[in-house]
Length: 158
Ligand SMILES: Nc1ccn([C@@H]2O[C@H](COP(=O)(O)O)[C@@H](O)[C@H]2O)c(=O)n1
Ligand SMILES: C[C@@]1(CO)OP(=O)(O)OP(=O)(O)OC[C@H]1O
Image (cartoon, rainbow, N blue to C red; front, side):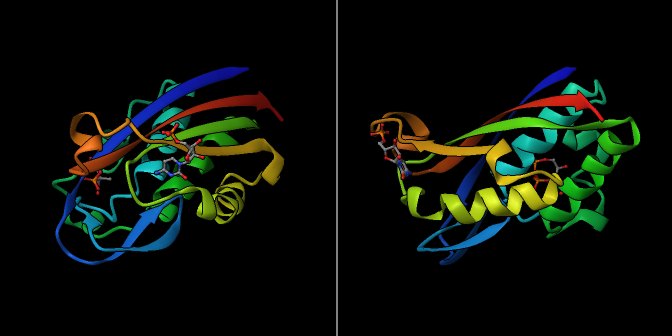
């Protein structure tokens, strides 16, 4: 049994469009800036899986100075990291994610995100928890300068 933790934060840019969060697209007045699609949920999950495997972090596997990953779909990165966990003989026990965001409202999108993450981690939706909190208007998240996510993953032997 192995446990891992991951955290990621990305800044907003004043470009309307869609936020990529948990592998789904959420329409919003701003988008997240990053080298890839800036999906903080999947990045936190990737780092939690890599942490559980003691395999470094997302930047070590997918460097942000490598043009291959410019605009990358984080779902593809997540699938690749999950492949390492499978090769090592693990399956998902459960994953728990907290999204820190003043806006947009996340709750309506939670079922779709859980479904997508369950697909990526070859698990049942009952093994995947995603929830959100504001920071009560405090700090950079409260000022809506960006948002973040934290994930904890438990891996079990197959
Ligand atoms: N971006 C967000 C933040 C929160 N929620 C939901 O609202 C509830 C209350 O949030 P507090 O920060 O005031 O505790 C929270 O439990 C979430 O269900 C949300 O949907 N989107
Ligand atoms: C995913 C990578 C690679 O495109 O870029 P970003 O989208 O900037 O994301 P970050 O969370 O900083 O993780 C590492 C990167 O190397």
